[in-house]
Image (cartoon, rainbow, N blue to C red; front, side):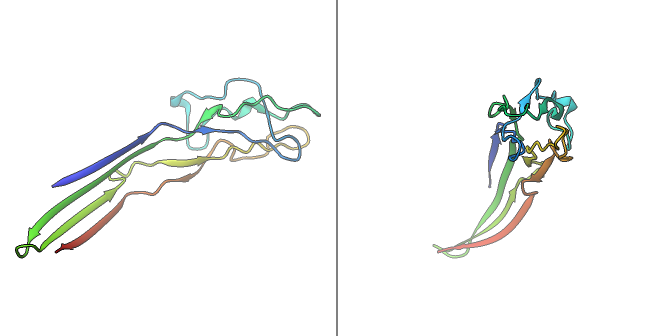
Length: 145
């Protein structure tokens, strides 16, 4: 017998933050979204459109301008029940979490940091920072009485 579950979640909104000592909100000069064909591990959105706002002004960036990575997870269970006695059974289980081992990134560096001249100094801006767990296999014996 087998069972499974699929978790497929659309992407989550991401906020871009600025340098707190200069301005927590940055200025946006264009569209930040990159076409899917142009996205890479270290470039998930157009980082060049985020600029340091003019002195004594607030930036114009809105919340949730870009979207982060989604979730595509397949969890599966294979099990076999074996009768031992009249009301005693043993169950052998093989459980697989993220069964197809699909790489799923979890966070993106969204901190736009600038120097005094307004140049971007965060080399990892727009890069993936972490990932969700890889495939996990688990074997179990379960006695039911």
